[in-house]
Image (cartoon, rainbow, N blue to C red; front, side, top):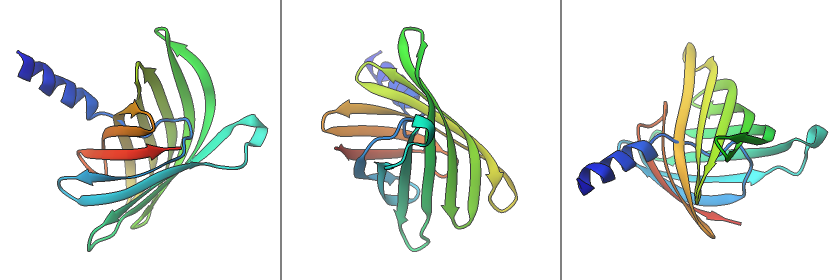
Length: 162
């Protein structure tokens, strides 16, 4: 029974992505089918109309490099869903090899962490739907993130928060 509960928890955790709200992080991740990623995020120094903005970056360290950048704006940071704080934002993701997507970002704060998801419509070798989902567990000043997306089926990341 404990193993079944543990596997269910891991499967649930594998449905996440970086939160909609901006944070300062630096770290690395590992995807079993792709290899190691360097990743980080920054709170950008400008806030048009008082909207928090951020930039998330990932770079695959492999023979066939991939680079991912997500520019995000946290449009509604103070929503409350089921007594949990939520954030709703808009993201523009840029990818190398060429890809560009625009769509909503959603984060729901859970005790000790955050569940997040993203969708984006755009172009990557033709019409493409980008998606990502995951869970970030905060172990101040570190965070453990488990995620899945259209770019990789599973990514485990260790991040330093400042």
